[in-house]
Length: 288
Ligand code: KIV
Image 1 (cartoon, protein in one colour):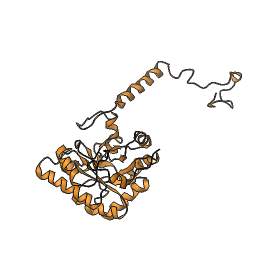
Image 2: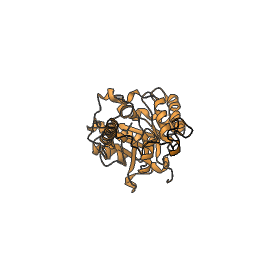
Image 3: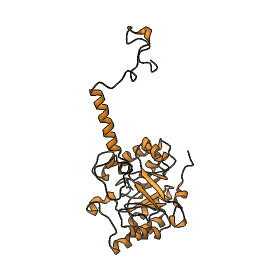
Image 4: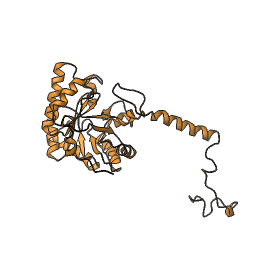
């Protein structure tokens, strides 16, 4: 296992400074964290997307700090090398700075090394309070899924000059407030390029084109575990849902036709005990 990645090291990862692009994926449990770690990613985001891709909700508004802490803790137990970022759920940073610090601390105590929150200039007081409490913060602007109702759906943001200028101002304000990186979601590529050039912290894009300092995808999207919707920005690197359905179908078929379990997949009593009570001393021993 390599060295643990740190916030200061990640903060310096600007491609304009000759650095490699950052790679972030979401993960929500220990197996996912081990996969991300062994694949060599830089950051694991325990995203509130857990609501939709794992917990079956229609949007991200349904998860609580307790839900997020549960999933952060599962990821952290895998002791992954990538930096673990815990997503602050809706309403966990909207009711004042003290409340936000308490909620962020719950994610840090669960094992996150940083938190992420959505929104631009209006989040500056919260970001400053978190940074003052020694909690590293990742910003998230553009298409912010927690604002789904306010946005009128999941819509690409920053499409006109005014909106693009506002995104640049939001990013600069977040960087000045102390964010160590900023997720740019669902914005035109040229706007993402402008934002990326305007800040000295890395931008991490999702549906924001190639000019960002890094890219993030949702674990279940990139692996094809989620196959119901495929947004344009998702590249599927595997079809694990289809493979899983085929594997479970093969198991069902084997059980129904008597091909599972085989003799080799069954435990046996030692020869001399054959005919003895099946509940004898050696029954169930793994070596039998
Ligand atoms: O929750 C999440 O998965 C996210 C990413 C889409 C950036 O916020």
